Length: 107
Image (tube, rainbow, N blue to C red):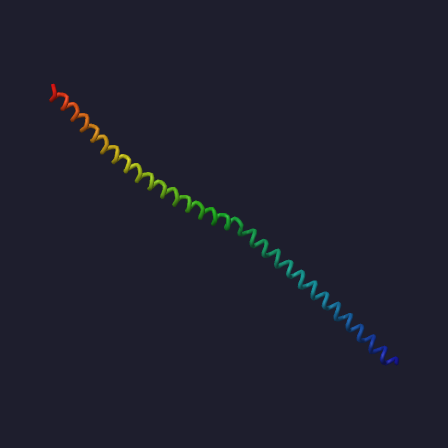
């Protein structure tokens, strides 16, 4: 009986040792994981200005493209309006001259 109790006690001590080692390994793994998370957060936080700058640059590019396109359309429309105004001006001058000449011809 003494022998059985001794073996049980030895088994219990081994089990406690395994539990202690497992807890130590768990604590080490947890600490390493926390450190890795902290390093990842630091890397991410360090990249925030770069990410922000990249988005800002892309937004500026799109804005400049839009401005250039609007400017091109505006220039085209201004040219169209100037051409139309010149045509109408010439028609008005001709019409006035015709009326004046017809009035003179009637007198």
